[in-house]
Image (cartoon, rainbow, N blue to C red):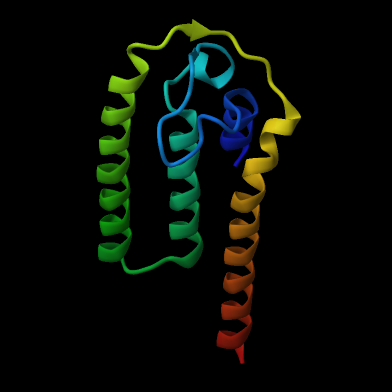
Length: 123
């Protein structure tokens, strides 16, 4: 989640929709070290949920393969879009983190489901 918050603080809302709409390619903050830190953060969130719920190995591997395939396609498409954009250094803005509220809510709900599951299993 920390990686996602760091990246979201730089990228802003316009570049985080279902369509590519960014006006420039950010080259500082987490984007200085990797091209897709939000996707890296997503990977760790998915991996954390898999570890938390400990599904059968086949399901865990299948989920990871599907995640990698989906994001590989997104990254390839996004790279073609970003090639033509100018590079820009952005500033971290706390106001850019509003979009992360939904991610935090989903994580809290998943953790609550995990806790309820553990409580029900212990009875």
